[in-house]
Amino acid sequence: MSQKIIDLIEKGRAFLITSHVRLDGDALGSELALCEMLRSLGKTALVYNEDPVPSQYRFLPGSDRIVTELPPLGGYDAVFVLDCSDLDRVGEQAAAIASASRIVNIDHHVSNGGFTDITYIDPEASSTGELVYRLLERMGQRVSKDMATNLYTAILTDTGGFHYGNTSKESLITAGNLVDRGADPQWISENVYDNYPLAKFKLLTLVLDTLQIDLDGKVASMVVSLEFLDKTSALSEHTDGFVDFPRTIHGVEVSILYSELSDRFFKVSLRSKGKLNVESLARFYGGGGHVNAAACRIEGELADIRRQVLDFVRDKVLAT
Image 1 (cartoon, rainbow, N blue to C red):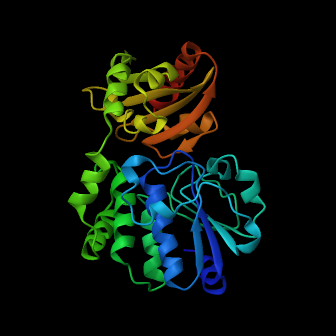
Image 2: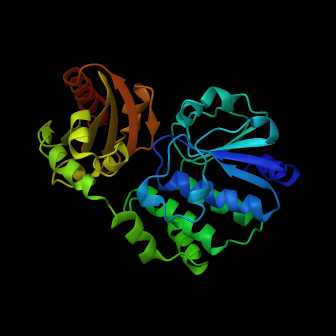
Image 3: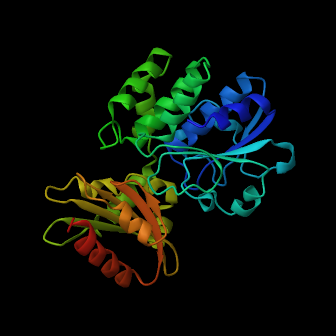
């Protein structure tokens, strides 16, 4: 762990915290826990995100205080960028944030090449939440019930409910420690996984109809179109978890979700089983992530994009 981060926290007075667009449980849980820790030390701390909090995460303590308008950065000693392998992931205000006097990056993505001098990066960690927990422990800070709830949610969601390959002994021990400090596993899981709006299921019924099996049953993919979102009044956040459905099919080793963002522009979400590295595909197209879970954005016609992705999966991913 970088001692520079601890020194900066101890000497600084005000901090801004942010994360990537299309917020998930790890990003939000990590931000909110770090924010509370800084405030408990008597610091001024604020969480800014470009996107609003998805409905399934509004139960997280402190989520109602997150702002979506970037404040002037002059009053902050540093900006913490969490769960981002690249500064551009924070969204349209990336250039403004780049001008901050100091940037601290805490992240666990294998694709992180280091975009600032002050970092805490560990690709072996299950989540950024796990890294924030280590920071709290290293600094001897008390973990409150609210912090425990946020960090447990971070670890729970980024391990896929503790069944992805990044579920390690340390992540399970950390989760257990957070339960000791007040996190309620049942209540958190019900909020995260059993609290979806009807629009999500209406959207899923349309998306399932696009299921396509390729490469002798080893690859399965689905498509989310803007038309589907409009027809069901669903939001893009409601597609979270869709890419995992094809992976549950017997024999499928790689699942892909093509989400239309605008005309001729798609987000490609990737999941894999075992040691198959889909991060290499995402990185090739300027994205990133983890070995078994990654994403990128590709411009072009959907049919052409699918051919490119399948060729890469066949020649680079499945061939390893």
